[in-house]
Image (cartoon, rainbow, N blue to C red; front, side, top):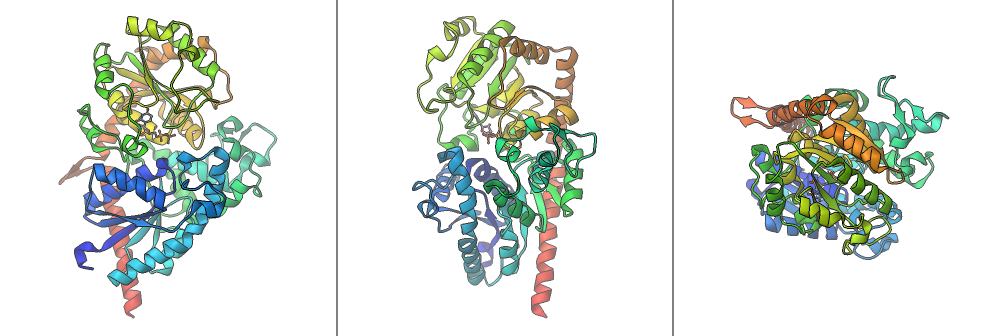
Length: 505
Ligand code: UDP
């Protein structure tokens, strides 16, 4: 292998689109900033997804490595090595079976070492692969954990799983180790897997060793920005006691320029293979008809939906508020998400009234989110507070109404409300009930340009400025995220030299 073909970094994402996408973005960013060749290792199906994404956007610095893994060996249906294709119950099986990637991953690293005559400078693995630390060390390199979440969300997730503090009290409110006393958490902020975890259940038995393993990494990379999360990053650094490099936000590049062309494709769309039913151009034209900061954009992530009564109450509340909106809408819970949307799920005549009055645009299934968020007419975002959506919204200075569903979304929302002051919560979870009056009240309050709505907007705009500054990449003016990536690279290079000194002795 010639020197310019060396694989310098090997990346191992978890098997779900929500992980593959930021890891691929990370691989591209590292290659772009350093020229390093980066290999992404994963199971055959996920490599196939990545290959088709890279076909749209070829990148010679990125190699793909297939790891042997057969889902049916682990009680999973054939060809289901990705959370997207699985029901919640089978997802836990996918997690447990992921430890079987250890041997094929080790073999892949040994093969790289054999071909190159030297190990890669580091492995970057997901927080769910704590075993990668020992595997990386065994071939003479180090492991870095990449958290696809923010500093605060990662800190909460790590400490909650490792300590299960809610199990040690009868109260619904409790403290989380590593957070200051006054920063109380509430059981309604925990996903049911975590709420029910007792240290001996399937999820704890997977999460606890993997997360503790990851704490032995050489350092952590985080998809966030130093200046927007000083509190969360400080807590995380103290808790994990190793360097944390905030190198985000890893978003498709054109967002920086604020001049997204209408055919700018998000990574998600390519990877998920979902085409918007209403073209991005049409959404933008619709937004053009509305005033500055006047439209509420509603979307709850790539795979969630809400109940039939939620859809009804949301629709009535929005109509009564009179505020214009774009709503990415899917069949309700209990129905096939890929099925045709039925008008009976909405109040009678709703879609017609919204079309005629230009008050609401319903986009079935999937919209070009970043383009909508970056349009000047978009004033607020009703979001599930998934980390990518959060970063996308903040990068455009758009305030948030939170309706959190699962994973670390409740912690993201807690931070958006308490630390940043850019969000209010509409409700929590899929089981919660909402009324149209509440939807109307919250929508009016947030869309208001004065009062609380005005304050939220001001804060969101300040955060957007910090994010833009963090990714500035000029010779004499580098932002914090660019500097963090430089620092990460020089740390692993120094580490590499240490290893050579050791092996040369
Ligand atoms: N997304 C989109 N259009 C949609 C729904 C989602 O482009 O209609 C994209 C969104 O821009 C974001 C990603 O899908 O990049 C969702 O990621 P997030 O972390 O917010 O939530 P998840 O889907 O993983 O729960």
